[in-house]
Figure 1 (cartoon, rainbow, N blue to C red):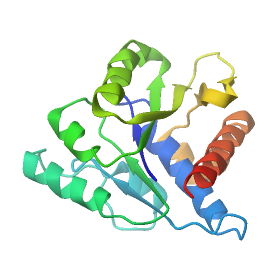
Figure 2: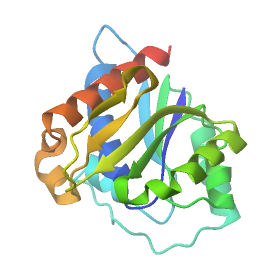
Figure 3: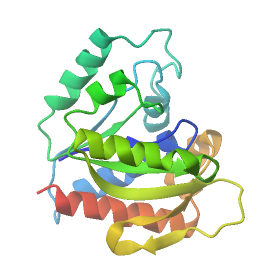
Figure 4: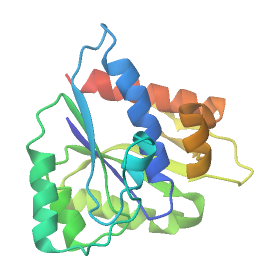
Length: 197
């Protein structure tokens, strides 16, 4: 199952995805699941996800490259040819022709929109519908707003997660998330592994 994390830029996609990756790694190797799992970033210009997942690696957060059809085709091919049970990919934060190309292999998407960018949500839902990508989860992220995290509808995986800053994630990893958001990420990781049979 190929899952892409999409949504507007500055919605907390990279820290959310990094947290999910950490939890998936822990759960994927439990005997209960016994699933193969990998992750990748589809944005050629941004290496934030690798720097969060592998803080000791030699990654530069921003890459001095431009999007092009050729680069998008390369990323798409890399995504398409992964044969693990579950592949989680972090997507660019703007709807473009390149985004459409790199997300083509995706079976479903986790939509992440910050509260301040919720007006862009409909565009992302339209994108999913136009490209035939199933909406797996629809999450609102809040950072400092006084809104309690939690599921609006657990069965539809619709809810609000309290995001964390990159520096907090660097320091504390998944424990940087508040208890409710951490539990929601764990539930989402379990759902993904159960559904990736």
